[in-house]
Length: 126
Image (cartoon, rainbow, N blue to C red; front, side, top):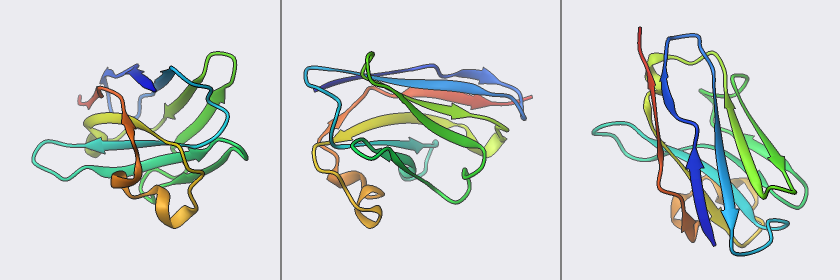
């Protein structure tokens, strides 16, 4: 599986971006897609995840209500809509894919994901 993340950029506080995670190499009908981010000098952290078969979504507390996951089956792409961006959202965002359909307690663990995209930088600044 190859993942291509895109959509990052520079945006002012309160602005919006849509990140894309496009997959190739296998069908995208099962498994778990996760988004993680890493700010400079900080650990990588969980942002959001979608369990593909049932489309259940899970969000880290600080982004819930501002970020939204969606999916385009035909394009094998998962989108992460970022609204109400804050300076503290500045980070490189990574999408990742895991073959298992993880339960909520497992999908926040980045070590459980087998495939990773290259990252896309989101900078929130005035």
